[in-house]
Image 1 (cartoon, rainbow, N blue to C red):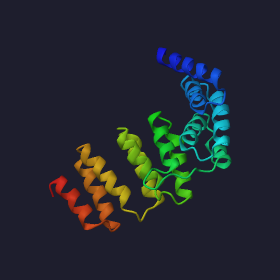
Image 2: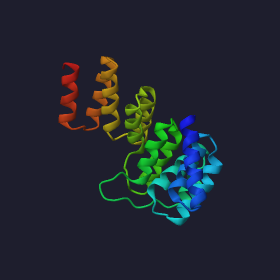
Image 3: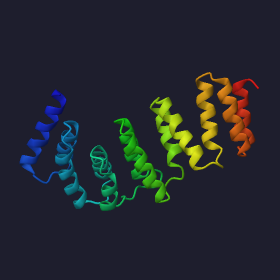
Image 4: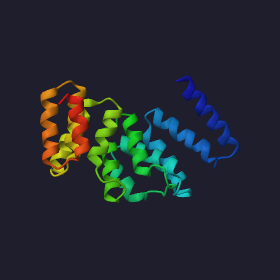
Length: 201
């Protein structure tokens, strides 16, 4: 709380000197977000993004605020994705990671689906599952993988990852079932053999 207060005071001092200081405005927007004042944050961020539509940090922060407001679809419609340098994460993937860090899982999945619709990613549910695994949300990861296996029934990838989760949970029977499903969907021999070795087969 004290750090937040200091942050706000520093931003206010800078804005008294220069009311258009973008970094100070960004700090103020972040403070509003931390104080659960998304509407105030959104006003500031929209002005900043209007001034520089290619600012990825502002786009991601505004997207996060809109996710908290359950308003991602209008955000995506109003604010096109900014370009990013080669070798860096696309803006919607960065936004999805930001959502995950705040447990905004619906927002994260919406971002991944948005990226997939624009050809930036192929499998939003698989990526969501990987993010859930990174966050150690095993049940959520399994749920996304089950959805992925239904949505793309010919793809062995969800079954391979379900097998990995079952191995990690020491559920050998489930792991073998998932591995069989992956094999039936023509998973690569290397992927099958690697998991068989982990299962002691």
